[in-house]
Image (cartoon, rainbow, N blue to C red; front, side):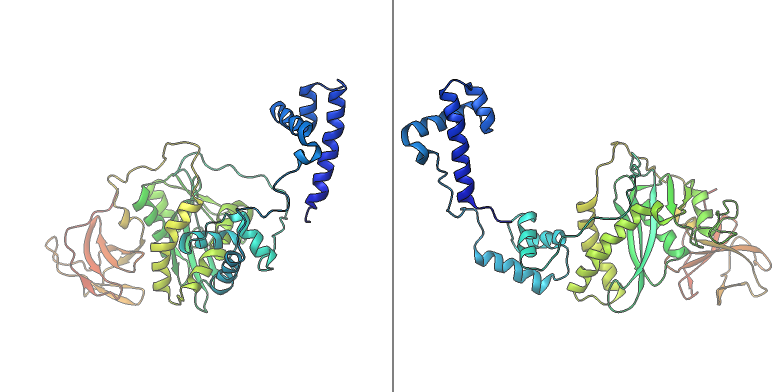
Length: 395
């Protein structure tokens, strides 16, 4: 609703005259008169002097009827509207304002931008709703709890895929994020591996009850903490506590974060014309994530960090799928439809009927271990690769 400034000015003068008369009759002190007018004593005395000299004309606000020198011109308003319509249609006002100020030289604030777009009918205020919930306090230190979850969505192009995200509970920093065809054991381990490579070992991992995370004897029931999945086994070897979530509300921080990503990342990928997973992952890593973390990371309650170094741990050979096999008569191991040929070894004549362990890494590469020693390395197709130095797993 627009305010009639002329009417407001007349009411202000009438109120002043009444208070001034009571002041002149000694019914009000200077302090009381200033308090009723909502101004300082100095300003009341200034108004009194102007009134004594010029009457009501001395009280007139010289700004009434004049356009503010800070008011945006029509050209500036039209430019912002055209920019939103042609390049950022569908963006939230906050998201659009970040791009407009960073890439297009818009100097106006967020509230002004929102007002312009709303008056043009391009955005509508969002009503808050939903049940009243108590906010779960964040962990006080970075590295105390890490969330991992995935969201299936049409992130780019026309097909669905998964975005796997790992983030710190204390800071909301996304420590790992990437697109893949479908989440699973390999993607979960990759997220943990990238987080450890960036910061070090953390205290606990909070996930849903997906089958690659947990064995659940009864649908919708409690998880089996004794019968471990590959992810559970790797976390136990690393000394990381694995925590299961039992409701979407329990994963509220991850759910809200995916809401932000679906609102922002999808539009940015579409604006860049990205339609392939390789290009999407490149944009995500090189451009989007640094800006996202800068915008949404928060300062933890404690300046200390719960991350610890990985001294003495062979992380890649823990965060991988490990399966037992028996070597065949031709010194080969069958694994997922591939035949892995074990090369000659200086440590023994052959490995026929030996119990070995196949390591399947998140990037698709493989290795065969006999005890702590790697006796064969292979690419994603099962072709032998140079073994180089011997690899020993952590105890």
